[in-house]
Image 1 (cartoon, rainbow, N blue to C red):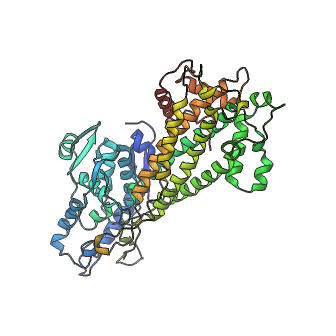
Image 2: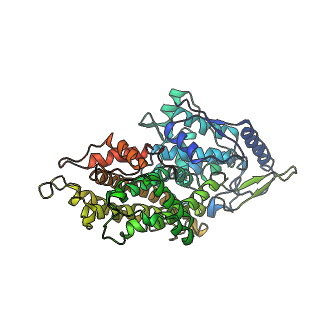
Image 3: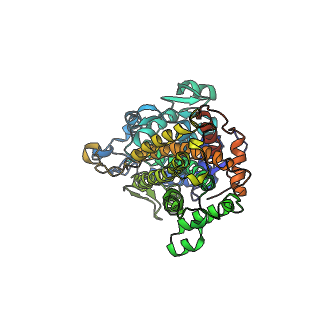
Amino acid sequence: MSDIANVILTPDTPLSPSQIERVARKKDRVEIANSASDAISRCRSQLEKVLDDGLPHYGINTGFGSLSRKQIQPDDLEQLQLNLIRSHAAGVGDPLPEDVVRAMMLVLAASLARGHSGVRLDIVEQIVTLLNAGITPVVPESGSVGASGDLAPLAHCALALIGEGEVFHHGQRRPTPDVFSEFGIKPVTLVAKEGLALINGTHLMCGRFALIAQDLRRVTNAAFIANAMSIDAARASHGYLDSRVYAVRNQPGAARVAETLRGMLKGSSIVVSHAADDPRVQDPYSFRCAPLVLGAALDSFDSCFARLRDELGAVSDNPLIFDNGSEIPDIVSAGCFHGMPVALPLDTLAIGIAHLAGIAERRVYHILSVFDPESNLTAFLSPKPGVMSGFMIVQYAAAAMCNELIGLANPSSVANLSTCANMEDYNSFGPRSAAKAARAVQLARSIIATELLVSAEGVEAHRPHMSGPVVEDAIKIIREVVKPLTTDRSPSPDIAAIEKLIAEDAFEHLIQI
């Protein structure tokens, strides 16, 4: 377990993507604040006041979905909740990554801790116990339509809470009862409303969104460094970064990008070396228009992340319990579980990521093709063109990944399929949006790593001239894991090594977008 400060669940403070990543990937401990414990217990006490009133309350003493008109007798309420979990654990496919499941669990616990879901404190404590013990439910990848909550994935998670199903512990997939026995953990017994509260929220797509946001931030930082590096590798102009251009263009993202690139290239002697007698008038769009393209992507990302921050402070199950100041609470059945507020931003992220990576691949192509003889580079950066192919095929690989990104940019949330006998007749498919966005980030990381590999070699081809200090520092970091190209070798390990630098935030101290 990590010794870093605990992540504390409160009823009023949203989680941050950083906190979710720390718990999901670094196994930071989770605590429940006293204020959250009080809110949870107070809400449960209010809910229990309506259990014997003889009236139907959805999900509390009725069936679910299209079976909601069937009122359930008091003696069957516990069995109702147990049956709900077992029947809804209908996911298929390979297990989700453990960090995604842990993120889902933490977001679920935080939502329940806000005191509007009607569960007992025991339920939230059980989730926290598993997180702190490093016990992760086995959750199949497919099965959620992201509208009536992430039902199937959350049901598989809930199976573990009640001592059923399978879990991962120390990388091993094992029956839950065996692991519980080793840790002395007792399964919880679900009572009225608790099964529904555990599965009726956006916690999978939201938790995964938080991890995507963290990963994309690192890829974006690296993309800006790669862009600056490519400018000097290709001996392109710095003139199009003039701040006056972006003042009149009136797009904030573009201005931020241009300012960042100017800062990273400040002090470059490469640009000075071709300032006189350069016959070129303009550079290709992938250089000259990069501030506009990346700025648009950056503004889009910021908008999407704002919606993530909103969701991380949300309660997203149904029905909700509200204290109205009287003896009996208001129990409101609505649609808080619907994932569209998360699905649309996730779909939008994939579009922006496609542009972030796509324009990088075009710069790689430009540098390697020696389309521009003024770049003073050899074809494919080959140490001996003809005899050695150099980086020829890394561009092929980048093009193949861009082709996949084009497919991933097709949104999942725009196509609808009805479920539950047409009671649930408009779904979000947000979990698929999240899976696409996660894959898009992975591909973009590989493409940006490819650009860093190529552009670092290109900058060094212009020695003794130097790029800006930030770019040169980035090249030093790259050279710690990748040697210069002196003869043909497999580029795959080199790209993977730079991908790892990006994933581990090795460039964080050089740039923060």
